[in-house]
Image 1 (tube, rainbow, N blue to C red):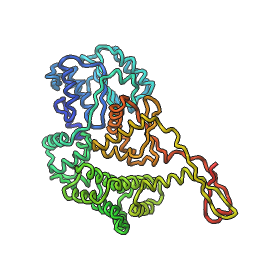
Image 2 (cartoon, helix red, strand yellow):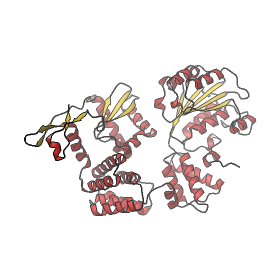
Image 3 (cartoon, rainbow, N blue to C red):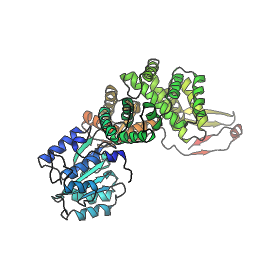
Amino acid sequence: MSYTALYRNFRPLKFSDMVGQDHITRTLRNQVISNRVGHAYLFNGGRGTGKTTSAKILARVVNCLNPQDGEPCNECDICKEILEGSLTDVVEMDAASNNSVEDIRSIRDEVNFLPTKAKYRVYIIDEVHMLSTGAFNALLKTLEEPPEHVKFILATTEPQKLPTTILSRCQRFDFKKIPDGDIIKRLKIICTEAEIKIDDDALKIIAVLSEGHMRDAISILERCSQENTDNIKVEEVKELVGLPKLEYISRLARAIIEKDTIKALAVVDDVINDGKDLYNYLWEVVKYFKDILVYKATNNLKLYSEEELQEIKELANMSEEKKLLDIIYGLSDLENDLKWSSQKTIMFQTGIIKACRETNFIQTKQIENNLVNEVKPKRTVENRTISNEVSNVSNGNAGNTNTDIAWKKVIDVLKRDGKIRLYTALINTRINEVNDLIWEVEFPNGLTSFNQKILEDVNNKNELVKEILKITGKEVHLKYKDLKNAPKAETSKTSSPINDLGIDINIID
């Protein structure tokens, strides 16, 4: 008998089985009860939040021979065939691999035929944002005026990539991240039915690590249950998901805060000798400093034990918010440099020494940027010296004053509401209103990979767009522009007697 993954085995079969999306399941049930089910739906949200599950339940309940209080019975012939995947009237399509015009045209040709057994022919199109422009155009007419016997359910993680003509023809439901408490409740039910023994603290860790995605939580639980058939504990969960020893991270954090270079390098040696990947380790150190900053601002963290929280509290009390921000920016730049370096160990050790000695990363980076962008080298061969001529370089579009004020309000709101990750990622940014629909966020100090991952998160993008909508009344699309790492003007190396001294002279034309 083939093995079935836990998340598939315990996929909810009714709306009432779903957790954390009551605002959606309640509305869908009421539509079914009142016989007001729409012809096209758009389910939007992060991975593992219930989009596909809701689509499958809706496809069953609109065709169910014996619906009960807006729920499918899952016992009639139609429900059973849909659950088995054998009913041709319910079609599931992955737009990531079926995104051509021909794929959508085949649907357009099929919708004219009546269902073979069910009341409705239902098309569930997952990852719909992956459709090509031509495919969207082919879908548009059918979506606008479908036959009465056809229902469309579109699912996506990136609704901003859909044409407005498609969006305006769908009932949109936004699936939010599932609260940790609801994830824990669902995991306990799964553990009971699957006979998995696990500590409550381990369940809490899994819920936090899943970051609001139920499927991720179930996948982590499954990995842990395969490694340990007795009783799963917190330490085993952390080890299985690859969290490095917190001792290495907290020791380095303390050394940097205390500006103790010797202790910091000793920790680095321990990490290297233990065979840890320096890039992954640095990523965890940056996140740890972020957690210290969050704790300092909110006095609240979920992932740590009482003993670990005491250490974080002590480190937070030793540092000002600005200092922590400086460290995060500095280590994020080091992370970016480390990615492209062929001498990772040397680069890492040098970066940590700098972290211990610098008092203001941001100010230092601005000085470095000025030297790179604003200084033009001039040769004076006779004196064998090089003089620098500093010029004021315009940064281009200064942006609209009202837009700048609105952007500052958005960042202030993020700080006020305790959304520290987003707030720290957007500090020192400028805004450029390209047009009424597009705002460009400019990063004068560069866009680090750490901040880029935060900003590319779908939920964070939606949060920013919502705040802008509240403040300006405009629904905009955000783009990010890295000013520091923008392509530079071509340079040509010129041979001169100065080259004999081992100095490369780049003349900027």
